[in-house]
Image (cartoon, rainbow, N blue to C red; front, side, top):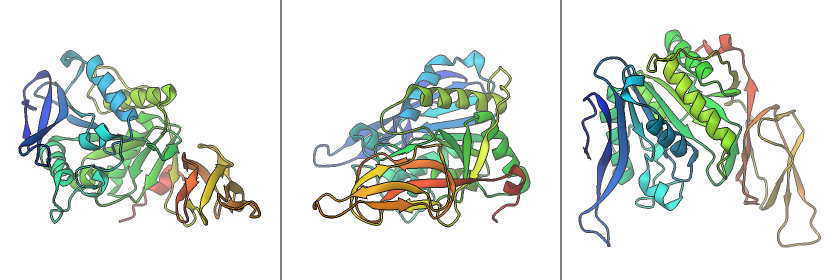
Amino acid sequence: MRCSIDLDRPGKREGYVQLNHSNNRHAYGVIPLPIGVIGGDTGPTALLTAGNHGDEYEGIVILQRLFHDLGPDQVQGRIIFMPSLNLPAVREYQRTSPLDGANMNRVFGDPALAGPTRDIAAFVEETLISRADFAIDLHSGGKMCEFSPCGFIYGIGDKEHLQNKIRAAHHFGAKYTAVVEGSQGSLSAAGERAGIVMLSAELGGGRIQRENIEIGYNGTTNTLAGWGLLADSPRETRTTFLRSWFAGSSVMSPVAGAFEPLTNVGQTVHTGEAVGRIHPLDALDKPPVTVCAESGGVVVGQRAQAHVVRGDFLLHLGEEVEESELLKPLN
């Protein structure tokens, strides 16, 4: 893949990364993935991405706005922007790529995989993450899920690395930050492999909500300031950490039907509490099935669409954890 701009030259430039793709419409088609860079030739580098999943537009709006707002004189170091990382999926408002059906956030770091989604991921890992000291990957729940606006960090690494991620989460300043095990094929995992300080965020879902845009925009700029990339000093912000890999943290639908949630994102629920009802679609004589939480916690994310089949995700819980506990790494 070829980048149309020099990422190492000082200034502010926008261009594209050329994804070559041949299909029934184009024998020699090119998909131009937008990319931009702002900054100088000295100082740290931060990579900002969004559109990893193609139905998550909040991060795209935030990074487009930030790119237009910042000038080279405001940046101490370099910021690289890829706001529509998985552009083929973004264009189609689909979570996964229409070109090969792949989920971009599961294909990083696996050279055995092939296809256009893997090509993009390889470019990001080999060309962009290799240049970066820090990275932020902005997500939301897309069409299917709504998240309580929150940061996400992987609970792995040595004490110093974990402290750097914790510090970044505080600077991002969302009410909650989920600490997760994550997927080895994610962009966050690629950042971990490179040893950079990597932060992700989930910013709502469904329709774009202004308050979630502001949380993401202010959180991103404050984190950049905390990393020393912006002239302004970071604001004093704090977050509450939630651990979300415990048994019962994910609540799945036991039957098919229409999901009626009885909770809201950000709400605290208790063990055994009713969190939703599944209403039958094809019979009047069947009562709804009440779904209860196996464990207590904060509702981090909740299904946004009503139709469910057995095994579908309904909601995800996080339990509050002390910062000192996070410094006991998983590996």
